Length: 612
Ligand code: F6R
Image 1: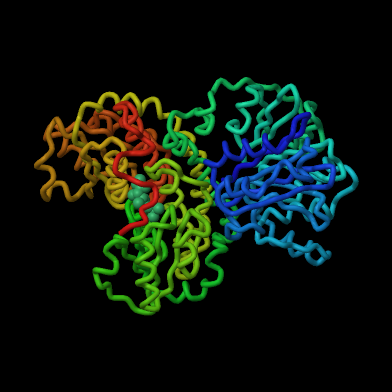
Image 2 (image 1 turned 60 degrees about the horizontal axis):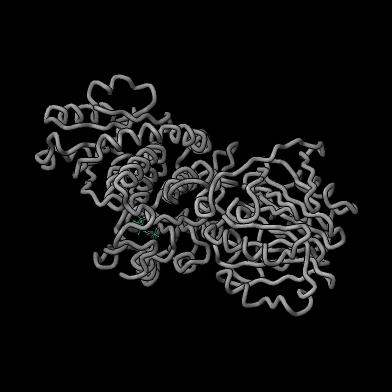
């Protein structure tokens, strides 16, 4: 999730672009860059790190910038393809350095296009997927950038928000959207295009939201919008009623809620370009170089911390059931103290959102010291764990800002499902089963949207339970790890006592605690263990417990045992935790927000735990 901003108008573009970048910095900031059209040609500069590093490289009072500029684009990068570096930073340009563009998203077919363009003599300088668009435009250019762009977009697969200009057409700024957000801000003196309104709101509240497969041709304060059939599209401006602070959070009161609501998109981004449905296979590019080694492993050990470890536990169930590969999960913080018995046929898989967790990194080093293949599921490109592992899969969900992990968790579980298909298809999994898992995965974002509609209902349930001090979370089989995750979410942001248990463990001790003051959150979708969970609910009910149940849509009978019910759409049993996680996140969020907690920055916690 990068941030892009473009400006064309009567004012000097550079200060507007730099201010916009700072406002978009929360979207990710491993590097940044800006390109403006000046009287002396295009001035472009890039830097690794935060926007201040870019600022240090710009001297606005000396030529070519002293003459000002009325047209420019800028970008703050969150790496997806290629390490954070100056060459990989945007804006990118064509061979003649005339067409400049900034991109947010992933071009899925960039490798095919790149190979084709290289054959035609184009010279690429970066490792990014984005650069291919600049060369493609150069290749197709017919003297009119708008027509050329529409032709080029028809050839692209994937997601993009693009802002583009051509030095030979300096009265035109183009924007195009498919999958990644873009908004156009209309001011008296010019037009700003950005990834979100936070870069615009200081200048105007009049905006136009571009829809997928639309191209905006902007010249000063005039604009035309086209679809990919080159037909003009009529659009109405909207008035935003947020202030600057709320705009970064897209109007949500907290980043955590924004990130919970982001999950249909973030999950789709994690899956994008990775599923070959007709073959019942997945394509995890980051694992290509170790595919044969992965085929030969006989055991997988997963090590991670906190929420990432809970995702790992779900992965253990998936991989053992569907890929038939022996898998065990460790606390990364215990991995090297436990003296695990490992041989060369074992691989270590670590899972880390930040890629910087010291305990997880230590587990990688321990495994490497023993000669094991090390793999990672990591969100932050170029992070220490991403670099230390032999190969891995990135989450592609953009930065997670709230300390409590939400969208990373669902993405980690989805990537573990992809990995299950990869491992399974290398072993005994049939094409039909591979295809079924993939199809169900692709259906998840829409189902997540359904769950988000229950947020207000969950808020009311949270209000009802807001005076209780202890909560138990129960689940079985695939949803047993989710009981731990639900409890962790609640304790870390509300500071309440919450414990997760395997449903079947209750009668071995913990049920002694249960009475009317100890509500139980029961994760009980209608799966292969539903009847057992239902019996557990009745046992709890008999002890006076208040029960909040999460179950499959349409299950009315559960109301006989549960006090409150939250429904999730039906999916494959192994994928239910990805959906059931969302009501748990919303319940924890609403309860903590109602109690006035500092939801995004809970006390005593840090987003990245770089000490052991
Ligand atoms: C909980 C949470 C933590 C992290 C853990 C690992 O909401 O965020 O439990 O999951 O600290 O962090 P990463 O994934 O960055 O290694």
